[in-house]
Image (cartoon, rainbow, N blue to C red; front, side, top):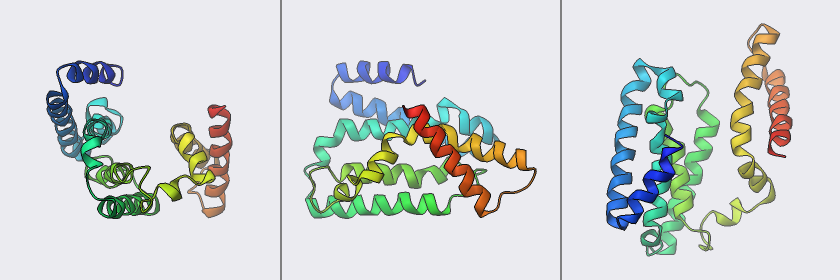
Length: 187
């Protein structure tokens, strides 16, 4: 699906903005529905399935298609929504510690938070863009996919190698290892 997604977007966009919006919204809604329904009964298939994760890309695509409309919303409202989005991401990072209910409805919080943060606009002086321009956050953002790929194997293989649940020290050490592997992968 990730290979077909750009082709679907291009095809939909050649038909016009309204058809593109409806097409992307339909694919997004179908994927989110599948994710919510199948996460409980088929968690592995739901977590790794392209059909149950496409909605995450879909929300971003919808924002890209309707972004100029979002720019018409007053800065103060977009800023409030942007800061709400950042708060949703922080809550997700700080509270999501188990994956048996993820993606499903749990994924709505970080994904919707990301969309809100992006929709607040880069030019909005009241929004979170000033915070998000800080060097450490830019570094993390540019390496987020590589970190996504490395963090899980480092923690799972690390726990298996130690033969026990990880304490805070071991967890931090393995996260450090994941960061080193992330930087290596990024370079």
